[in-house]
Length: 68
Image (tube, rainbow, N blue to C red; front, top):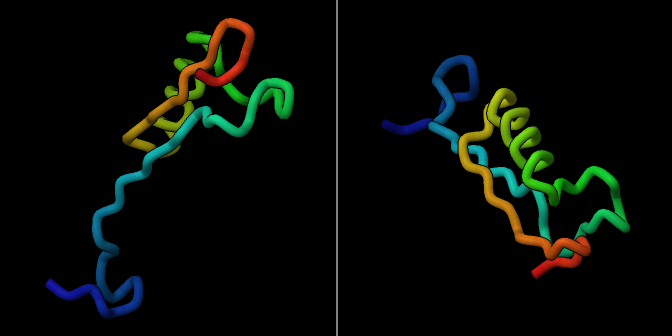
């Protein structure tokens, strides 16, 4: 099957959305929106799943908020 026709003449190929909720660069000191506590990670994972994401990965942080 070839997907050369523009939408809506042919369907888009399958897409998997991967979300990284936290990374090694952004920290709570940079932005308060980086989830590092378990409750924050779960809440954000539920939100991005509802928005269409199907893979979620996170980077671990120490209790002081520094990346590990």
